[in-house]
Image 1: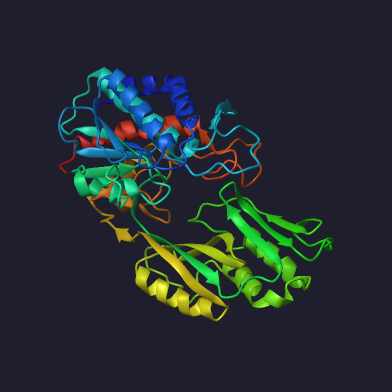
Image 2: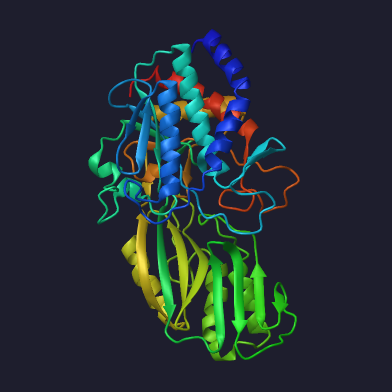
Length: 464
């Protein structure tokens, strides 16, 4: 690798901080939560606005820009089919309540950009855009054609990749387009992810309606809150880990990413435990016992689906949302599973286990399936060494728990960016991806830029 060129690149990266901040803020200020489909915008106007903004940035910078017509765009360094795709997404999860900062009026604070989507993953998008632009301006010639790809439905099913039935604007990238020979997805951590667990959602419905209680939890605007409203009680006693106001009981815990449920339980656990301990739900005791157990026992033993794998982390269950339908509660379970069990087996076993507690299967959705690439391949070993060389760590190739575009693309790897490093004055649970006051560290983004610069140059020396 040319030491003089690297030195030149590093100096440019040092001076790129303001550009990274500006672009991250511009993109973060676009509210790109999935919404009603519109013509040409299958996942809503917000996600489409991100694509249009990045296309305009790419055209101004002289990239070869393509709107693939399925909710995915690309900015290629050279004309023709890209060989290397670096995949980002412009959509975000709902912002929720309780922000200290404004989610769509991003600011720089204590070396971070604060706003919804800053670290998942608009900051990463800014990194790759400015790095490829830098390579272009320096006239660096690569023997392959790298491209920045941006999708618009990663957070809610990756229908931009697999298709949305009945919508001609969302036929699915992998169904109608040619993917690059190699793909990197900077939507995780360094050094490199070479595979990942599968993901799915199950919803269970109580056989009987609750008796005089309205119960909700994990709604999009309040993802860390569970609330029980009693019809026949105007005054309730104080309850542990809960707030009581008249006939309403509320429990709150910090929002969590679905891939990493808290083994100590969440707001559903705390609310259920408090109501059971106070003997306030005798007519619905079995239901609340189930809610208490299933929201805390995160590895699926109660549901009969506990699964381990020699390389992957154990199966996890995230009981994260409760809604109500004519008095019946509907409980949503986000399940991340390793190799060793299938989607169909999970559906069958959960259905049988839930029936004992008075629940039926309401519906199920298969998201991604588990996969593993060769962790000893030259690409993995080279990119791992590159990342460790910059971070100073001795990290090993790892397997993901979360779902990313790497699950949907051939020869794809998660590569960085480990951008989430909230300000030191943030309390625990604040500032994370999908959380309140989501933050991305500009230091981490510049570090990622240095890693990717070396990765692109190293790939130029490999035969792949």
